[in-house]
Amino acid sequence: MGEDTVHEFKDVQSFNNFITKNEFVVISFSAIWCGPIEAISPVFTSLSEEYPEIKFVKIDIDELEELSQTYGVTTMPTFKFLRCSGVIDECLGANPDELTSKVKAFSEQAKANE
Image (cartoon, rainbow, N blue to C red; front, side, top):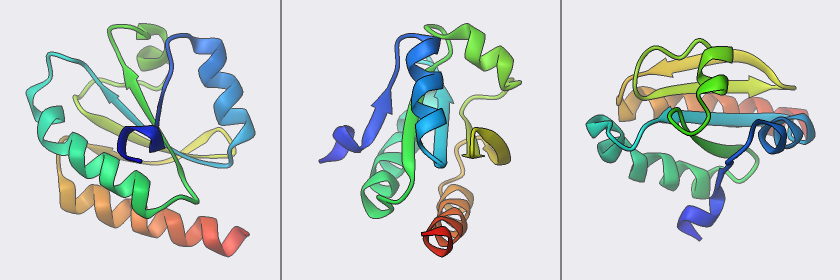
């Protein structure tokens, strides 16, 4: 499992198709040069395995700068929570406890919607 539960995209169209087809999505916006992302990346991957009802996506802002602008990303890392393609919450910075708490709450919404 592991990285297989975190989806990565190299183009905007593939990303847009994916979020349109999946109701509950968490996006990690980061960059390879971002030190804090190295610390929280294993947490993000672990959450993707623990909460399969949510789709987890990783976007490198240097590869898909257009998406970082679309979503107003100014802090690394930034996590956006999407429901039906619209942002309903976010988590800024590498805070494992806050990210875990928000993913858990988001999961409860997803399960209640099944």
